[in-house]
Length: 86
Image (cartoon, rainbow, N blue to C red; front, side):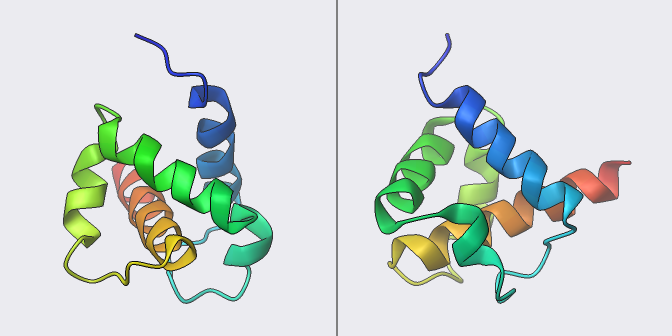
């Protein structure tokens, strides 16, 4: 089943991958992730995504409740995992 944000957030992950953004502390995250509402929506989307929910669980004990920090940590974890697989 497709989610309305699949395309948007898949593109966001791809952009972070192309930029090699594997560090949640990277100063470029705000420009890649966008505003707080987008970050919160991404975290919610990733939490329920069949592939990315595991990345959410992987970073859950390391992240703050702030949407930008949570989204950055999740995307960084996804990018790291994808780069390790290639």
